[in-house]
Length: 139
Image 1 (cartoon, rainbow, N blue to C red):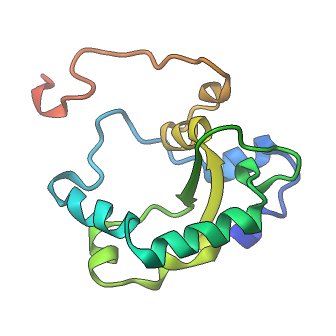
Image 2: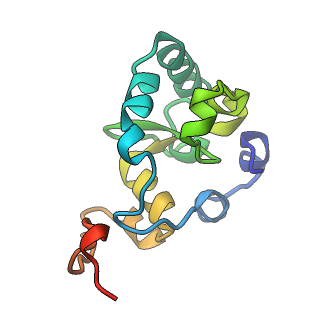
């Protein structure tokens, strides 16, 4: 299990990115029909308070690296992705500050796709037929 306390020991953005990257595919199911649980959780007072704490703790810096200010949308990222079951069970991992870090929106996408090239401003994701409609894929 990855932890914030380990992440902040890494001195460079590259090392932190390598530690955080997940490598999902476009259209890969996360919450599917249970997305309402995800949205309800992220609108809760408990999450909003924790989110504010994490942003202050990380100083609004991308991947919590000093001097790497986030310009624009700040995403509070779960270092170890959470599941529907964990939200339903109120698993402590879901609200554990040691499982959270501030990232920029483009960094968040790069982490999930596992592609460091997405960190470059203006990068366009190469699309393939049916990549957002996995149920239509053939073969």
